[in-house]
Length: 337
Image (tube, rainbow, N blue to C red; front, side, top):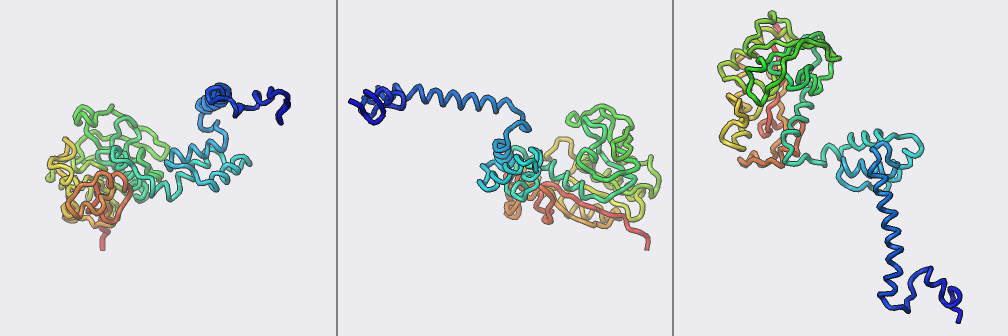
């Protein structure tokens, strides 16, 4: 008897399982087909896994960017449009990555996880530093980097060219073990010359009166006693030109005390609240030009609660400085008259 697929059912076996056969017999014939499909899929997955990002085919590259940066699958329209742009040569792999990285979704809807609070604080300090004024003569108090001779200010993104940046820091052997580094000499950073003064930040005798445009104290004033802090500020006022700026970022004592009773760093001598720091720089003779906070703690702070999830997620500069993990003040030496 001839069926619709061929003679005596011979073609049926090649095309697929005979529904009249027993389930076990049919599955026995399907398994080889599935095995071939699985092997092909595995070979393709292995091939793609061996490619760098820039070697990925456009469609897979777009998906990877979305998966990694936005932590989701791409929208179908965006997926198709970006893929087509890559195929046409209008966008490179890195162009696609930059578009997503510069999106509002990436900045506002992809929070940093609580285990990366320190990294989130680092990102916020970068945002504070790129907003500092341009200056030709700069002094960085406590700005030694543990591994980079350019110093913290340049590494964190200070964008402007300068004539000289003087990094004031303790000699490596005098530092707390957490901040030990090698001793660096003078050198060019690509933006200007950097040199080191290994001494206490309370001793700025190397600088002449009214000779500096900008002083940066990043995570340093909390490492000296309040009395020494007054000396630091007095010296900063002395060496700044009239109209020159002092930028400070430092832990916010109010939020730190919600985290724990002890100082958050064993080398800290003080952790100022916003009102304490404002009063201190004002008493030293500075005008506060901008008062901001880094890493906002959300509504929990007003309830007297420490919310590490919010603090890690809400990186950047905030107007509500009192509820932030770090304080960030931009102060100015008054001009005569």
